[in-house]
Image (cartoon, rainbow, N blue to C red; front, side, top):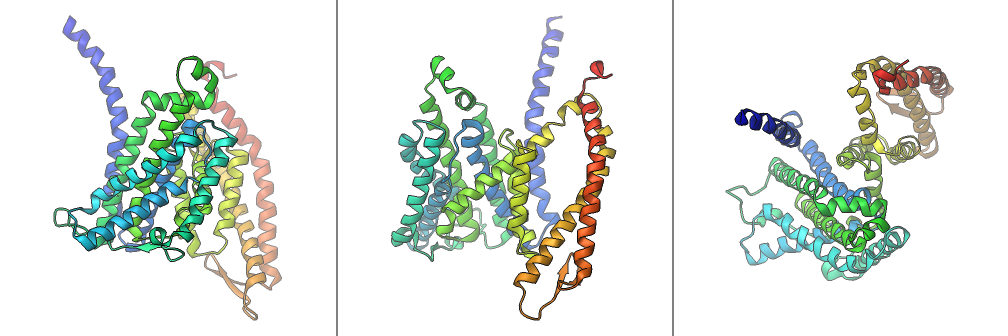
Length: 429
């Protein structure tokens, strides 16, 4: 009797264990077989950049999402970690030091941790505007020093290195891009897992409490300053790992890796994915990298589209794309998630046509204003057209107006289906 009760009690614990482990196993298998689908060097480079951005965004979210600390200069910890790793690679090349490439991100993390430990002593005394302004000042100071201290930062040209001179790791010398991909993927999985575990520790939990109500956390006996400090140092460590992986992949670090633009980009990435959910920055990093690399190959206006997407997210989906996904949980619990498929399709089709038409008008305007003299022909999604002709302007404008009108007509039915899906069955009228 007692043995059967103990077995029944262990079943929920086993189920809980597999719920925590299964996503990580699935992610590892996904990263393992992803190069089978995208085997080209350009695709591997994009995926490596995506992985680096994911680590950086998750580290930034440790401040913003968990601790409520808005930083405008967080790229310096990634940049300094990357610069130090480039110098380590050059040291290994000159002195033939016994160091293999897979261990280099540890050094990057320690360098980022060291800088965060120093800066955090005075920047984490308070959150809010004070912390944001201090982070901005520190970021601008180090970015300016990168152009002055040429011996370390290399000036405008930056510092380069060669990863192939590192000690081979089990006869792997990381000549090919696929070897670098798997190295980056392993560190992505390790970093993401450690950051997730950190969020489950008492310090990670208290960071949420300090973010929401620092006075109450102080009343319960926890120092809000030290909680912020520990979160800040942990974030700097993982930013340094991201910088080391950047140095391994691209073998060069410049001032762009730690300036204000890079700090602003990671802020955009984190907000785009969603700061309230752990996997939110992952979605934001994937979208940002695809827009920057893939879309950037086809149009010069990719930054305009990214800015419009960010603006729409802040205005209509403040919890980011991850928040949109999480908001469907009540519908899934009620068993009505499938009922939203047809309304979503009815809304998605005219919305896609409207966005396509508006983007076409933007491309026409850009080509008409910036094309060389006499260059009237342009290509938009494989369609050849003349930017000086009235026909494409009329077609795109008409489609934009019509599709927008259809969206306005369909929107009430979508909202009605949404309200019905999230309403518990016992409360449905």
